[in-house]
Image (cartoon, rainbow over all chains, first blue to last red; front, side):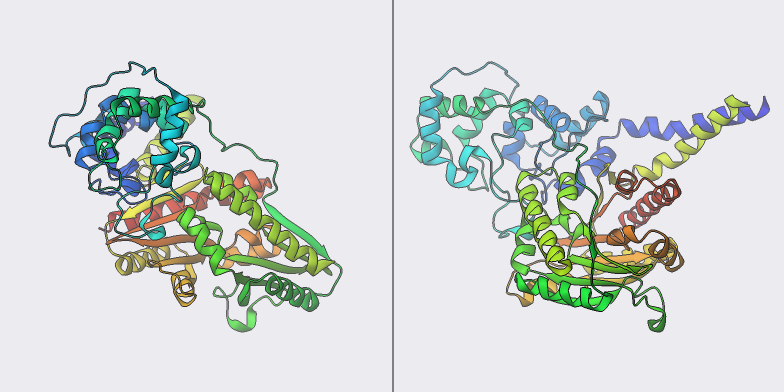
Length: 346
Length: 155
């Protein structure tokens, strides 16, 4: 009984800071948002939230929905586990960066000519926002682009964005543009109020249900091939096959190199590192987090007389990043790995 | 007795709560931002790895390779780490795990700040079903979160 009381007291003591913490927008922001949007909201991987025009154009409801829905297919996750109070606390913290009052939320739909809107969008918006309004390339991280631009043009067809934004907010953004970004006010582009309504109508027509492509996949975690050759022959075959498709060999080293003395390194478990820097740069530009399974490497292992070659399966790992462009690159990478390993073991 | 056991579990969970909440931890990835610049954060990271009982086996300078190939890039490196005895045990007993060994944290500059990201070791639980590996993956997850927390609060 005494133990029970002690545990209850300790639990209450432990819960106390957690309860207090739940209401602290700054802490919640730092823990959930700052890693992408920056500690001061200046942006980075994520868009600059402290941009004054963004704050003025974005009602609280838009921010709330954006946190809830995330941006499926992009780097922004859906924060489904946050409570309403926690989301409100984060929105309140972000809002404090604003110097002017935000626009009011109005969910009234705009009825206009979406066919005409598509034509106008194609003429004026596609250069930045891409075909089908899929947005600029990459996540927006400075690594992948010139530093003179604060944002990558967002995906306007993203189901998370369209589930968060209202028609009137979209119209307002197009009419006003966004200062300190390449987004010009519609009037400077020579667009009328009706033109803008038509664009909004076109964009709304692109809306799809919210989804997430992060799911169980049938793909194996590893690619493994048995080799009919001895260890050294297989190792050389891997190197030759990688070079044969324009990869540059970086090095070959034992699996346990760096952990044991040189003389104790495993001679029958060797890793071949190789790279195609064009491919690497493209992948990092799409999402710099892909380094978690780069650079390219294939391991040659001999165990009980059987030689095998193995690697991670990029196709399996790409789902972790929830990015369609990256899925395509990872599919290609998986095929390259397969072709190298098949050629080495045929 | 059963009640006390449940309370013990709850107690342990609550003890871990503040630790877990120091980094953005999704099922897929663990990511933090350090307000320190890249060189300082790199030192902090390697120190934190050692304090957690791991050994840095290698730092891969991806940015150097990219720059030599003519690409403009910020600093971008991979820090490989593990426990020597554990690597030895795993590579011998579970060679199919080798493609995911050793553990790795990606560290890259974003202006004057630094981002760190790693695969959540919990992902490996779905990929390798051997029961004896599961406690190792759970411990790796907690250790990686601790390392990231130390780097983040080193500001």
